[in-house]
Picture (spheres, helix red, strand yellow):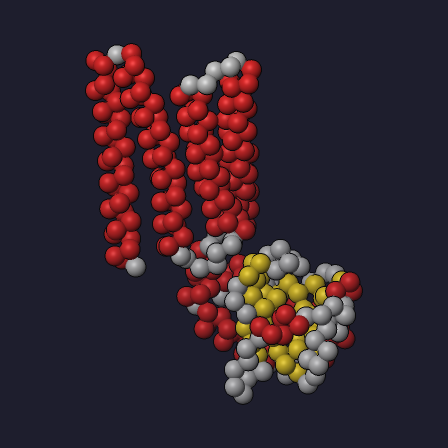
Length: 287
């Protein structure tokens, strides 16, 4: 899903120019408040929300105007935090925000602000629809919804699985120690392995939801992806290392003839560690 933001950033100048030219054709935009900006909603399929803020009081002076409804609850609410983030270019009455998730519509959007007299008019444009309108993407809405739903279900399923693993490992340790009276290497190390895997699964689920569902990161960032891969592999290496340590102890206490199996396991872990080191080195060199 973050590909939409990449496309937007790659074509940002063209998109902003299109919006600015289109809005300038209307002259004074505030006059459309009389018909609740219906004309603008008809012309801009990507337009989702319009509201007006007074420059002096920094409070919203109008309701939230949506395409098919009007919300008066937001009126007279302070928008000082929005005003402080506006950066109008010299001799220009229009400012553009960075992409973000709208708290009002829950969609990915950009906000265009226009100064008119004592007011600033805010327009929220939905990014996907805007890109589709400019033929920058071909959006298949059913497939888009299906993909997002799949990632949502998969992400939260992994969250619950990670939580289950963590809770079960704690329960297993407590049951072994308090009920069965067992306090050996297995009772100590197995919960540690489970907790480590639980953390790895949790991190993976968090990344899936952030990148594919909730868009915490709006631009392509290879450092984030590298960090996630590194954290996940480190968790796996730790779990395997603990398992290898347990195998060595067990074999040392029971059967030295099988020590070669422990060597194979440790060698495999070493190869993974070497591969991870090379990956980190090449990634840092590239950046």
